[in-house]
Amino acid sequence: MITLSFSSSTLEKLTLWHLALLGIFSSWALGGGSSFARDTICILGSFAPLITIASSIERRATGRSSIKLLLLLVPWLGFTALILISTLQPSFRIATIEGGQVLIPRNDLSTWPSCARPGQALREIWLLNAIVFSAFNLLIAIRHRRALRALFFVLAANALVLAVFGSIQKFTSAPGIFFGEVSSPNSTFFASFIYHNHWGAFTVLMIAICLGLLFSVRPWSGYRDFWHSPAIAAVVAIFFLSVTVPLSGSRSCTVLSVLLLAGALIHGLRRVSQHQKEQKHSATVPGLLVILTATVALSIIFVLARQSIETRLADTKMQLSQMQNLGNVGARGQLYRDTWHMTMDKQWFGWGLGSYGSVFRNYNTLQSSDGLPQYYEYAHSDWLQLLAETGMIGAALYACFILLFFRPLRRFRNVASLPRYLFSGCTLILLYAWIEFPFGNPAVTLFFWIGLFGAVAWIKLDQSKSTT
Image 1 (cartoon, rainbow, N blue to C red):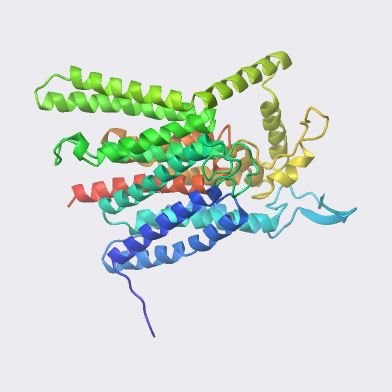
Image 2 (cartoon, rainbow, N blue to C red):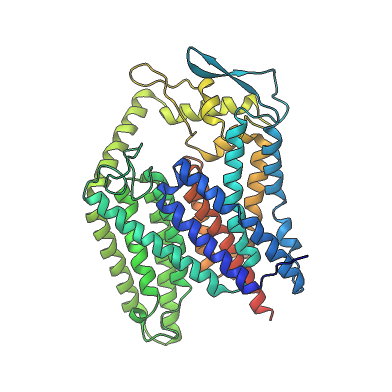
């Protein structure tokens, strides 16, 4: 009998290479927005459980139990089981009428797990598990903070290259992605992402990572000065990433980025003040320099993205005017109401993962200006869509799984800067998911879980270091 064993360092390296490959590929492959990209992520991510099992065996062999970590997966395994069970009972049958395929409802299955599109649900749960288990390995396989820092540095460098690439593409008015080599189904593409709001969500997560890297380094400790420390690389990345959010035309993510950066500015001023006090120097001049630098950076960002900002402001004014004339919140509000009606018809188990676009046609009351019905593949609210597709039970399992990893925030003051910013970025995306569908993009989903699991892994490594 042949047995394979891996050292902790080998498993750590495998995890880092695996996630770096997934992160770089998904971000450049249209954000994972094509069928080929999604299938590739599924295949690459399928190796993750092997790393999880090998890491569990290695931890047990070295006297470090992994039971508590694996128990954290229980809600997620319950969610996955619910999806798989639902596929065994199709709630629609496909019929061909006049050359086109239509979905015809079967008998009433509202009280049992069922699925409108079993094949689509299987593909979606495969993709989600490939992403979640790949990122979960940060918790079970990583042994050193420098390994996590290296992964974040590689992903930040990749995002910086993407930001520069996307900016050049935008300023040259490229007709499509990769300077027109790939035709985008959405005119609001940016960099390699088909939809500008997905780029915005990706950038918010990457800015959070870069801010975490910046504040995890004390430039005055171990380096000649700020300009000769790794912090300057983080500042450069933050600046270029920040430029691209308004440049892409993503209004909501611009607001999220401003909130994140404003918090970082306050944090930076407090850091400078604390350092100056330790050195028994005045903090006035360094503080003013920080504020001046931030003001100059903001001015440059406005100049570079001015055209996009003015265009989106004009769109916002027009939308507000239309809502005022109609006396309601417009098409988006009606979309949410129709989605809620869809949810209430199968409130416990939902219509099946990935079924929204097919089932919502029966609930859609929105019409375009020419009187034709509008087609929606997404609810433009990930949380509402989750409720519609997986019901209250599925959504509760999903939310419970996420909340388990936010538990360290109960002791927020004891949390280091890097995980604080990772948690902040993830929190902003979770809030954003109420009014948009960032998790409809595989790259955003992957980086969200990398950020969340990376934050928890960093805290656990901090705790293990303090107890040794």
